[in-house]
Length: 236
Ligand SMILES: C[S@@+](CC[C@H](N)C(=O)[O-])C[C@H]1O[C@@H](n2cnc3c(N)ncnc32)[C@H](O)[C@@H]1O
Image (cartoon, rainbow, N blue to C red):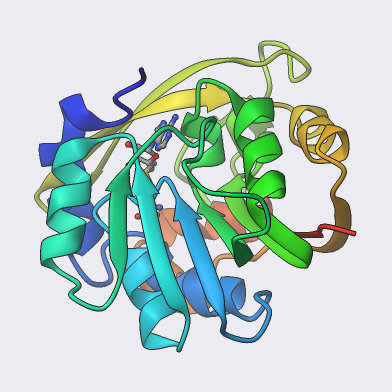
Protein backbone atom coordinates (compact mmCIF):
# COMPACT_ATOMS: atom_id res chain seq x y z
CA UNK A 1 0.00 0.00 0.00
CA UNK A 2 1.12 3.55 -0.67
CA UNK A 3 2.47 5.50 2.31
CA UNK A 4 1.95 8.92 0.72
CA UNK A 5 4.14 11.60 2.28
CA UNK A 6 5.23 9.46 5.26
CA UNK A 7 8.97 9.81 4.34
CA UNK A 8 8.60 13.61 4.14
CA UNK A 9 6.18 14.18 7.03
CA UNK A 10 8.75 16.17 9.00
CA UNK A 11 9.03 18.67 6.13
CA UNK A 12 5.30 19.04 5.56
CA UNK A 13 4.32 19.71 9.18
CA UNK A 14 6.09 23.07 9.78
CA UNK A 15 5.41 24.14 6.18
CA UNK A 16 1.67 23.57 6.48
CA UNK A 17 1.38 24.82 10.05
CA UNK A 18 3.14 28.18 9.70
CA UNK A 19 0.33 30.71 9.16
CA UNK A 20 0.85 32.84 6.05
CA UNK A 21 3.81 30.81 4.79
CA UNK A 22 2.38 29.38 1.59
CA UNK A 23 -0.48 30.36 -0.69
CA UNK A 24 -3.06 28.28 1.20
CA UNK A 25 -3.73 31.08 3.66
CA UNK A 26 -4.45 33.60 0.89
CA UNK A 27 -6.38 31.33 -1.49
CA UNK A 28 -8.42 29.20 0.93
CA UNK A 29 -11.44 31.51 1.19
CA UNK A 30 -11.85 31.46 -2.58
CA UNK A 31 -11.74 27.65 -2.48
CA UNK A 32 -14.19 27.36 0.42
CA UNK A 33 -16.64 29.63 -1.46
CA UNK A 34 -17.03 26.79 -3.99
CA UNK A 35 -18.18 24.27 -1.38
CA UNK A 36 -21.82 23.35 -0.75
CA UNK A 37 -23.34 24.34 2.63
CA UNK A 38 -21.91 22.46 5.63
CA UNK A 39 -22.91 18.85 6.18
CA UNK A 40 -20.67 15.79 6.00
CA UNK A 41 -17.22 16.27 4.46
CA UNK A 42 -14.37 13.88 3.70
CA UNK A 43 -10.93 15.26 2.88
CA UNK A 44 -8.72 12.85 0.91
CA UNK A 45 -5.00 13.51 1.34
CA UNK A 46 -5.52 15.65 4.44
CA UNK A 47 -1.84 15.73 5.44
CA UNK A 48 -1.39 17.24 8.91
CA UNK A 49 -5.02 18.37 8.75
CA UNK A 50 -5.16 22.14 8.17
CA UNK A 51 -7.91 21.95 5.51
CA UNK A 52 -10.01 19.49 7.53
CA UNK A 53 -9.65 21.73 10.62
CA UNK A 54 -10.80 24.72 8.56
CA UNK A 55 -13.78 22.74 7.24
CA UNK A 56 -14.69 21.76 10.78
CA UNK A 57 -14.44 25.41 11.88
CA UNK A 58 -16.85 26.28 9.04
CA UNK A 59 -19.45 23.85 10.36
CA UNK A 60 -18.82 20.62 8.46
CA UNK A 61 -18.85 17.24 10.15
CA UNK A 62 -15.39 16.17 9.06
CA UNK A 63 -13.35 13.08 8.29
CA UNK A 64 -9.73 13.47 7.19
CA UNK A 65 -7.94 10.63 5.42
CA UNK A 66 -4.31 10.24 4.44
CA UNK A 67 -1.93 7.43 3.55
CA UNK A 68 0.82 8.74 5.88
CA UNK A 69 0.37 7.45 9.47
CA UNK A 70 2.52 10.19 11.08
CA UNK A 71 0.46 12.94 9.43
CA UNK A 72 -2.84 11.33 10.44
CA UNK A 73 -1.68 11.02 14.05
CA UNK A 74 -0.68 14.68 14.17
CA UNK A 75 -3.90 15.76 12.47
CA UNK A 76 -5.94 13.88 15.06
CA UNK A 77 -3.92 15.35 17.93
CA UNK A 78 -4.54 18.87 16.61
CA UNK A 79 -8.29 18.43 16.19
CA UNK A 80 -10.50 16.71 18.72
CA UNK A 81 -13.63 17.56 16.70
CA UNK A 82 -12.88 15.63 13.51
CA UNK A 83 -12.27 11.96 12.71
CA UNK A 84 -9.02 10.95 10.98
CA UNK A 85 -7.83 7.69 9.49
CA UNK A 86 -5.02 6.11 7.51
CA UNK A 87 -6.16 4.81 4.13
CA UNK A 88 -5.45 4.94 0.41
CA UNK A 89 -7.59 7.47 -1.47
CA UNK A 90 -8.00 4.85 -4.21
CA UNK A 91 -9.55 2.31 -1.78
CA UNK A 92 -11.82 4.23 0.59
CA UNK A 93 -13.11 2.27 3.60
CA UNK A 94 -16.60 3.79 3.39
CA UNK A 95 -19.94 2.66 2.04
CA UNK A 96 -21.49 4.26 -1.04
CA UNK A 97 -23.20 7.61 -0.50
CA UNK A 98 -21.52 8.35 2.87
CA UNK A 99 -20.66 12.06 2.34
CA UNK A 100 -22.14 15.27 0.92
CA UNK A 101 -18.78 16.62 -0.11
CA UNK A 102 -15.35 15.14 -0.78
CA UNK A 103 -12.49 17.66 -0.72
CA UNK A 104 -9.14 17.01 -2.39
CA UNK A 105 -6.95 20.00 -1.62
CA UNK A 106 -3.63 19.86 -3.47
CA UNK A 107 -3.60 16.11 -3.17
CA UNK A 108 -4.93 14.65 -6.47
CA UNK A 109 -1.58 15.38 -8.14
CA UNK A 110 0.18 13.36 -5.44
CA UNK A 111 -1.91 10.20 -5.79
CA UNK A 112 -0.36 7.24 -7.66
CA UNK A 113 -3.81 6.28 -8.98
CA UNK A 114 -5.61 9.50 -9.96
CA UNK A 115 -8.52 7.81 -11.81
CA UNK A 116 -8.98 5.30 -8.96
CA UNK A 117 -9.06 8.05 -6.33
CA UNK A 118 -11.63 10.11 -8.25
CA UNK A 119 -13.73 6.98 -8.85
CA UNK A 120 -13.67 6.20 -5.13
CA UNK A 121 -14.58 9.78 -4.21
CA UNK A 122 -17.55 9.58 -6.57
CA UNK A 123 -18.63 6.25 -5.07
CA UNK A 124 -18.74 7.55 -1.48
CA UNK A 125 -20.65 10.71 -2.48
CA UNK A 126 -24.40 10.91 -2.11
CA UNK A 127 -26.29 11.64 -5.34
CA UNK A 128 -26.14 15.43 -5.64
CA UNK A 129 -22.92 15.46 -3.60
CA UNK A 130 -19.87 17.46 -4.69
CA UNK A 131 -16.21 16.68 -5.23
CA UNK A 132 -14.25 19.92 -4.72
CA UNK A 133 -10.59 19.94 -5.67
CA UNK A 134 -7.62 22.26 -5.83
CA UNK A 135 -4.67 21.11 -7.93
CA UNK A 136 -1.52 22.76 -9.18
CA UNK A 137 -2.65 24.29 -12.46
CA UNK A 138 -1.51 22.03 -15.33
CA UNK A 139 -0.08 25.02 -17.20
CA UNK A 140 1.97 26.04 -14.16
CA UNK A 141 3.46 22.56 -13.97
CA UNK A 142 4.16 22.36 -17.69
CA UNK A 143 7.05 24.84 -17.77
CA UNK A 144 8.90 27.49 -15.80
CA UNK A 145 9.63 31.19 -15.78
CA UNK A 146 13.02 32.16 -17.15
CA UNK A 147 13.68 34.54 -14.27
CA UNK A 148 12.05 36.08 -11.18
CA UNK A 149 11.06 39.28 -13.03
CA UNK A 150 7.36 40.13 -13.24
CA UNK A 151 7.42 39.97 -17.06
CA UNK A 152 9.68 36.89 -17.32
CA UNK A 153 8.87 34.63 -20.30
CA UNK A 154 7.27 31.31 -19.32
CA UNK A 155 8.90 28.47 -21.23
CA UNK A 156 7.50 24.99 -21.88
CA UNK A 157 10.42 22.86 -22.96
CA UNK A 158 9.00 19.36 -22.55
CA UNK A 159 5.60 17.99 -23.50
CA UNK A 160 2.50 19.49 -21.88
CA UNK A 161 0.44 16.48 -22.94
CA UNK A 162 2.26 13.74 -21.02
CA UNK A 163 1.74 12.88 -17.34
CA UNK A 164 5.08 12.55 -15.57
CA UNK A 165 6.63 12.39 -12.11
CA UNK A 166 7.23 15.72 -10.38
CA UNK A 167 9.78 16.73 -7.79
CA UNK A 168 10.21 20.40 -6.87
CA UNK A 169 11.96 22.09 -3.95
CA UNK A 170 10.66 25.37 -2.52
CA UNK A 171 12.03 27.59 0.26
CA UNK A 172 10.26 30.26 2.27
CA UNK A 173 11.63 32.02 5.31
CA UNK A 174 13.73 29.33 6.99
CA UNK A 175 11.72 26.38 5.69
CA UNK A 176 12.37 24.14 2.70
CA UNK A 177 10.09 21.49 1.27
CA UNK A 178 10.35 19.09 -1.65
CA UNK A 179 7.02 18.23 -3.26
CA UNK A 180 6.77 14.73 -4.71
CA UNK A 181 3.94 13.92 -7.06
CA UNK A 182 2.87 14.04 -10.68
CA UNK A 183 2.39 16.57 -13.44
CA UNK A 184 -0.84 16.00 -15.36
CA UNK A 185 -2.32 17.78 -18.37
CA UNK A 186 -5.81 19.20 -17.87
CA UNK A 187 -7.24 16.32 -19.87
CA UNK A 188 -5.96 13.74 -17.36
CA UNK A 189 -7.99 15.40 -14.60
CA UNK A 190 -11.01 15.92 -16.88
CA UNK A 191 -10.95 12.26 -17.96
CA UNK A 192 -10.73 11.03 -14.37
CA UNK A 193 -13.82 13.04 -13.40
CA UNK A 194 -15.65 12.14 -16.62
CA UNK A 195 -14.95 8.40 -16.22
CA UNK A 196 -16.24 8.59 -12.63
CA UNK A 197 -19.54 9.96 -13.92
CA UNK A 198 -19.13 13.40 -12.35
CA UNK A 199 -20.26 16.65 -14.00
CA UNK A 200 -18.35 19.92 -13.91
CA UNK A 201 -20.20 22.69 -12.07
CA UNK A 202 -17.55 25.35 -11.40
CA UNK A 203 -13.95 26.05 -12.43
CA UNK A 204 -11.73 28.85 -11.09
CA UNK A 205 -8.17 29.96 -11.81
CA UNK A 206 -7.43 32.10 -8.74
CA UNK A 207 -5.02 34.98 -9.32
CA UNK A 208 -2.24 35.54 -6.80
CA UNK A 209 -3.49 38.37 -4.58
CA UNK A 210 -1.63 41.68 -4.29
CA UNK A 211 -0.59 41.07 -0.67
CA UNK A 212 1.36 37.98 -1.78
CA UNK A 213 3.23 40.14 -4.30
CA UNK A 214 3.97 42.68 -1.56
CA UNK A 215 5.50 39.86 0.45
CA UNK A 216 7.54 38.54 -2.50
CA UNK A 217 7.71 40.65 -5.71
CA UNK A 218 8.59 37.54 -7.76
CA UNK A 219 5.01 36.36 -7.17
CA UNK A 220 3.90 39.06 -9.66
CA UNK A 221 4.66 36.49 -12.38
CA UNK A 222 1.78 34.43 -11.02
CA UNK A 223 -0.62 37.29 -11.63
CA UNK A 224 -0.17 36.54 -15.36
CA UNK A 225 -0.56 32.76 -15.13
CA UNK A 226 -2.66 30.65 -12.75
CA UNK A 227 -0.74 28.67 -10.14
CA UNK A 228 -3.80 26.66 -9.05
CA UNK A 229 -7.00 25.27 -10.50
CA UNK A 230 -10.16 24.99 -8.38
CA UNK A 231 -12.89 22.58 -9.47
CA UNK A 232 -16.34 21.62 -8.27
CA UNK A 233 -17.97 18.50 -9.71
CA UNK A 234 -21.38 17.11 -8.89
CA UNK A 235 -22.53 13.48 -8.76
CA UNK A 236 -25.77 13.37 -10.77
C1 LIG B 1 0.65 18.15 -0.60
S1 LIG B 1 -0.06 17.22 0.71
C2 LIG B 1 -1.58 18.14 0.97
C3 LIG B 1 -2.05 18.07 2.40
C4 LIG B 1 -3.28 18.94 2.73
N1 LIG B 1 -4.42 18.66 1.88
C5 LIG B 1 -2.91 20.41 2.68
O1 LIG B 1 -3.30 21.10 1.71
O2 LIG B 1 -2.25 20.89 3.60
C6 LIG B 1 -0.68 15.74 -0.13
C7 LIG B 1 -1.09 14.64 0.80
O3 LIG B 1 -1.60 13.54 0.05
C8 LIG B 1 -1.25 12.35 0.74
N2 LIG B 1 -1.34 11.19 -0.17
C9 LIG B 1 -0.52 10.88 -1.20
N3 LIG B 1 -0.95 9.74 -1.79
C10 LIG B 1 -2.06 9.33 -1.12
C11 LIG B 1 -2.97 8.25 -1.28
N4 LIG B 1 -2.84 7.35 -2.27
N5 LIG B 1 -4.01 8.15 -0.43
C12 LIG B 1 -4.18 9.07 0.57
N6 LIG B 1 -3.35 10.11 0.77
C13 LIG B 1 -2.30 10.25 -0.07
C14 LIG B 1 0.14 12.62 1.26
O4 LIG B 1 0.50 11.75 2.32
C15 LIG B 1 0.04 14.09 1.65
O5 LIG B 1 -0.27 14.23 3.01
